[in-house]
Image (cartoon, rainbow, N blue to C red):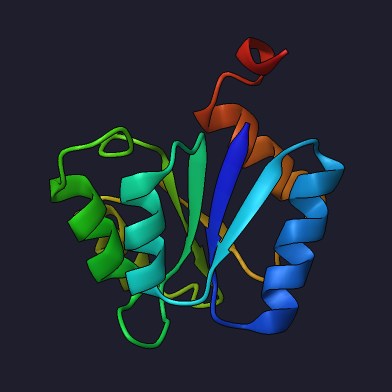
Length: 125
């Protein structure tokens, strides 16, 4: 199974990629929301981790565009990655079409739990 990580920070890209590979997933990285949208419209993914604040196009707009396009990932689970734990951000994420939130800094166990919550990991075996 392949997971898309949309994250502009290099260190966060590396941590997420390392964790996902450790959990047995293939990973694609998008450095901004536009790249995330382009990858999500052309490739099948099991799940997307979407940073909220990115250059070129933020994660909110990228999520809205993914939700409004016709394609295989229109209904894909999109999990917000955010260091901003302000209550209003949760509502903004849901309003944009994100399914859930994973707070940064990301911890391996938290990432594993959210993946298991949103995709059928047994179906991948």
